[in-house]
Length: 173
Image (cartoon, rainbow, N blue to C red):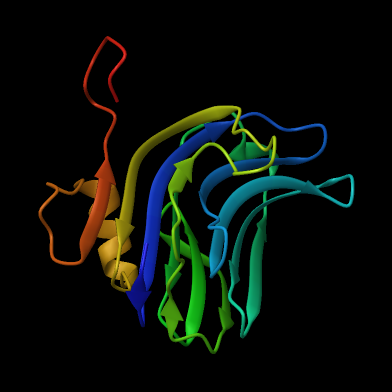
């Protein structure tokens, strides 16, 4: 993933409460350069939260959203939106967290985006993922709502990756 100015990550997730630790959802952790980590974790032994980390050689940002009991064992839509000056988390189309950032480029070198796994770590996701979208644009609040109600076709402007996991039975995803 390499983007200048904006990036958006959107997906559905269903998972149970963890007892401890962290489950990776989307990671881009190259040998050098920027890292992007979106995960579900138990923080401080009791707080359950969804979290995004953006790290470069110039800055590091973390934004987290605390989960409630109703968030577990049901499908939720999550969007993590980076504009270059803001980082936002949406849950089911509602902005639930935001923070100002000063990071104009996300440009990992030599990396592979991973779903449900973090490189060099045993942070495997123990839940279900669906309709993963990766964009090199900032999705607006309205766009997030629109893509919840009407999934992408796969050829929208700014869409750089889309995995809908709708292949049916077999071993191909």
